[in-house]
Image (tube, rainbow, N blue to C red; front, side):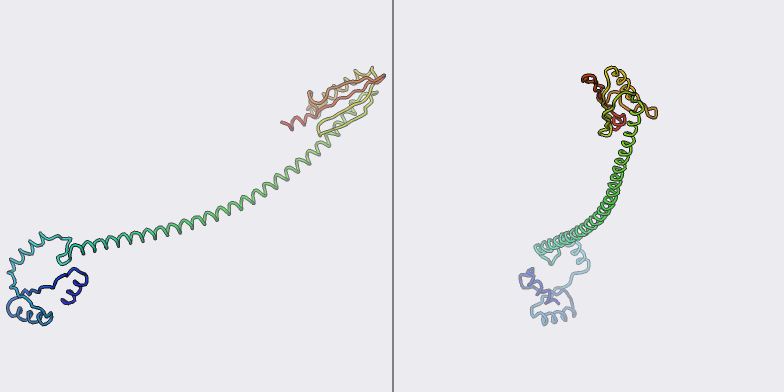
Length: 251
């Protein structure tokens, strides 16, 4: 083992000169070991008498106090520095590996969370799509209902206008045209003799003041006012009225 230790020192470079062998022993024990070492090593061995126990203890204490605890006695300073640097490098390498592992775990967690959130988002989008489809169908049905209701209301409004005109039309007045246009405008024209102009005016005022269910049917400021045009022995008259319902829809 001693020879192997020498070879190791020579290979690693910290043993640069031939070693000198010293045997610390006394008496018969020194003779036995000296012969054994010379035969085994093939080199001279110097025998040294051992120090007394008190002196050995004192020297050991002084050496322990004076020696640098960080520097082994048999290891050169440059090898100690190299081993220290290798130790530090291993620490850094392990730290980088640990950081890489933690980063990989964080990336896996991130992608898993992204996948879960993406799935939830797509599910919500499908729900919104279904709800929007139902909402759109509801709006279409409501629009169709409003159109049908408007048609129904306009049909009855036209009938109501015809009824009111027939009830209030004075005798002797000729009604040439009755029209109900744009769903809210009643237009009338006809002819009378010059002495019936006052009767037409009363007819116009009566229609404007007509009420249905205690509510005025026509707007007081809507439509075209009553106008006359005399042609020989006849007077042509015309006017138009606007349903109150049309004003309510505009609001």
